[in-house]
Image (cartoon, rainbow, N blue to C red):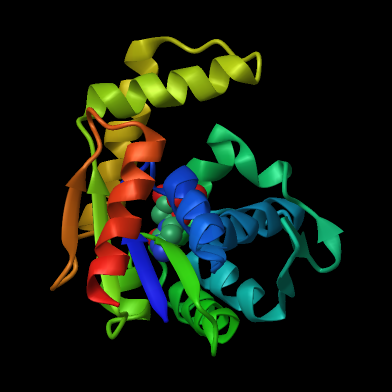
Length: 215
Ligand code: DC
């Protein structure tokens, strides 16, 4: 059984997806992490991220694996490296390339095969798992998403102005939702949850209730 959770950056989908998976005893797949690993690999190989052809040529050579809570690139643990703001932006750019998406979609479907799993990303319910039993789309207003991001950063000891975080979220929203291939949008049949005034616990409870009401 597959539960898909799509939504923009800062909508709360990662934390919620993890919690839902834990409470239901399901596996959890963070597909954004796979695009982030591509971005790390692009930098490690000194490829210009805007060179679509070179990036697309590199991707089939990469060995990307999830092991427990870690993500490995060619056996190197890159779990921390993928979490920077710079890598987030580069991942968003590389994810606009058709060849990159085709490879990541293949990888994501293979990981989810024969699993009870919560899959989180931007195109889970629209493209990767269109037949998922439950599709969720999470959203929140941009100020709330920026506040969450600022809190996350300050917990890591990074101070960034609210205005610059808003700008960075808006530009990522535009890139992710206007790209040609698999843009971020509400999947057909998805249940939309506005998380602006909800805690992570409340978001998870809602999704678990939806799951239990269907099965
Ligand atoms: O969720 P995230 O911030 O870790 O994702 C990083 C980027 O990867 C995001 O800006 C767009 C891309 N992405 C995607 O295109 N499709 C997905 N299913 C997940 C992420």
